[in-house]
Amino acid sequence: MKQSNDNAETDSAYAESLGSSTASLGESIIGYKYENGRRYHAYRDGEYPLPNDEKEQDRLDLLHHIFKLMLGGNLYIAPLPPNPQRILDFGTGTGIWALDMADENPTAEVIGTDLSPIQPLWVAPNSRFVIDDVEDEWVYSSSDAFDFIHGRGMAGSIKDWAKLYNQIYAHLKPGGYLEMQEYETWIRSDDGTLDNCPSIIEWQAKIDEASRAFGKRMNVAGEQKEKLIAAGFEGVTDVVHKVPKDALHFLMLADFHLATFGAVAKRPKTERNRAL
Amino acid sequence: MLDAVEPFTLAIFTRVLGWSNEKAQVLMAGVRNDLRDKRNHLYVLVHFIYGKKSENT
Image (cartoon, rainbow over all chains, first blue to last red; front, side):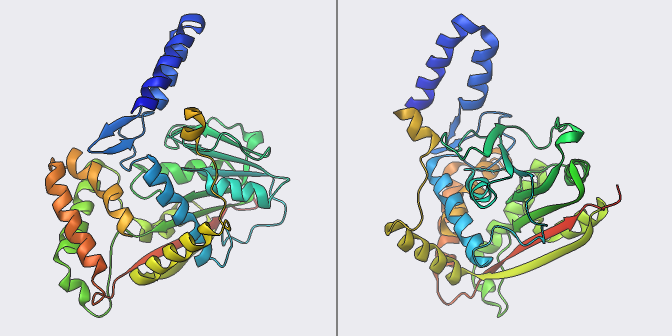
């Protein structure tokens, strides 16, 4: 919490020389909210219901590696033509997918957007990060259309999927691709053992109820194929991976193991840089 | 998955359902116990969905 206050003070100092708009913008983005021991974003306060603190950033970075392991080391499954020029990663979070994508495509420009400024300050020259709400009207010009747009884990963050997909379609080049990577927030079993999990049964029913009431339902991964088709996309494909709970634990442990040997380079965090 | 329980739960349960932090923590502890129990063969589905914009637009 101290860091946030320090940042706010820095911005107040700026305000005296640069005018109040600078101060209000700074505070509106980094004046994080603390609630029940977790930290939440400030820009468009309350719109995204998951935390953005370091514990959550670590979870998101681990999730990135789990997704890559699911895809055999790949970042996406869409059959992209070679040498994409412009790539957008909306809801980029810690920016880890966008940075990997920039590394793999040195001739492409990769833009990552998010409500939270939790991306590293030191990035590849062909990548940049922008604080933005993807549900706003997009301001990219038609000459800046994208070859590839990617979103991951956006379920629970989007109020109007049809509007989002229509905007994405409009801002893709002809022949450009959209790929969504979404996990269901609904735990299943095939052998009835979910029936022995009263807490999970209550929990996921309440998550569904609360996220619907919030206007951004979480468990919508299975509906995305239909929504892409409705937006006019062609060749819409939904590849479903079944991830057993124990495999997920194993993948996480395997990842920690790699991390200890430096195989997974941990990027400097924005907050830590600020603390310096 | 254990680390995902709180991020998905806490804000919407307290803000939308009006639960106390304590009440949410009790349910989340139960969820983690269900997840840890190796007799439960649980899984989640992950979707990779892609589509192409028409070449003729």
